[in-house]
Length: 169
Ligand code: SAM
Image (cartoon, rainbow, N blue to C red):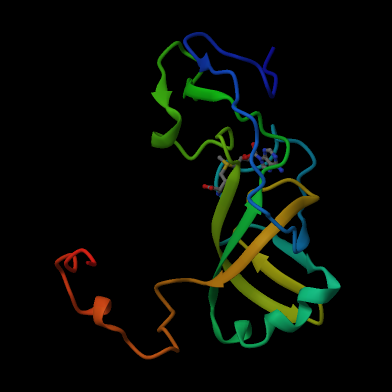
């Protein structure tokens, strides 16, 4: 039987070190049609269903200007994931790969990212297509798609240099 948090043949778990508080702030909640990890797509699709990203009240002003981008990067916390596997068997066939060579939700810090198509912004709600997370997944951040974004701040030296600068002192 396929389960959701099982260890599969060949997989390797470690004893998790104590969590240090990175100070993450959940800034909203993502509403999607998927209530089970077994039903969610493995990666979002541009023609997937419209999902609702609900922004918590203090962060709503931070949406200003986002509407000018056709695609946005959505960063979320895959809150139901186990976090202790260093080798995983996505195909569940005994073959394994290192966690950092995968986009599996199982990772030390279960960040999920999707490039989503912006459909609309309605008050405190951002409507997008292209997500793959469960209903109720906590939202960490929204950013313009980097391929559409030009920095607003003026360029700085490091933007033009290809070599590392000399060490200070
Ligand atoms: N697109 C993201 C990425 O590449 O970083 C996430 C990809 S991950 C393979 C997507 C899968 O994570 C879904 O198919 C589902 O099985 C699982 N998942 C979705 N929401 C989750 C949540 N809140 N907690 C744990 N697992 C979740």
